[in-house]
Image (tube, rainbow over all chains, first blue to last red):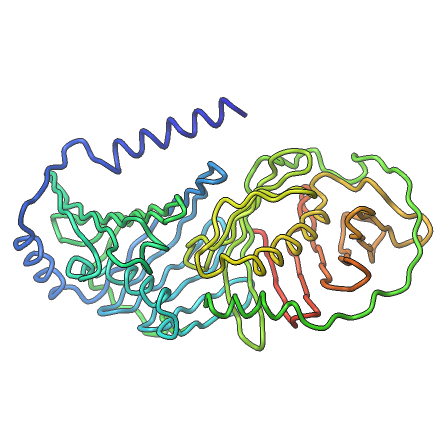
Length: 211
Length: 205
């Protein structure tokens, strides 16, 4: 058990070193070019379809829970996370609504009625469409390497800091699409999402975001 | 959502139903009677959670890990995986690791402690220490100390059964454990009569 714990922490340390910090990332002093590239790419993109892998790290249990599925984004503010493994369920962000389907039950939450969850909704959407780079409630630092930008965001307000310590978003330089998102919670947990096999501007039904 | 959850926990302090009459005696049964050897107690068990309260539905996730003979680590998250609370619990102690600020008050924490302790005591990860032969064919297990008893509707034990949690002569919650695999319930249905709350847990991993 002790050995397992040690191995877990070594793995976490290595992931943190190789992914979290990034060996070749250098600071970018001005974000003007980055924002211009993001805006230009956003203008050309209407949808994103991708496969995703998610690691949910539970600090308290020293465990990683892995899941995967298909991701859909419809500009400007509709997202569907279709979890396929280890079990099938979905989470939809549709404007101010959070819709989930678990255990045969559909849940619809009006995020606009709760400030904290409204902010979480905005953060998740903003992380995907890149608008979070302009979010006034976050302090941001930009880094880059040969193939990607990395944006580190820390919340300024107490309400957000109660939920989240930091968000790190990786953008692929070739099309400025989001390739990875790491959301570090105030509790010490984090979610690390990798988007792969991305397809831009594929046509899909609006119904994906309603049921 | 958080405000609704707070309401849920606060409303569970309402009026209770009387305890059904019953009389039980106990004797020891073998742990092997109950546990599948394939069950890995140290693996995190993940359940998708659906909570119904006052005709509204909330989804979330429950993460559960055995830490010792009588201990569990438990974390409950929102549907988008943000942790609401986490603690380590035994039949006599609780150690809070985290509680979301808007849930972090004594009343809510006491209710969470009572309800999850009762639920976990009934989880057959360690097997029952006590069983009644009097009400055969319905098996009964439980903890005399905690006043928590479980009633099977099916004496085969591996199949569908339901259980009842009783505290201080009041029926607070009825828990149904359904569809066992490798010693773990694949579905749990919890009904809280005080607050008219129902929670369904379906095992993910």
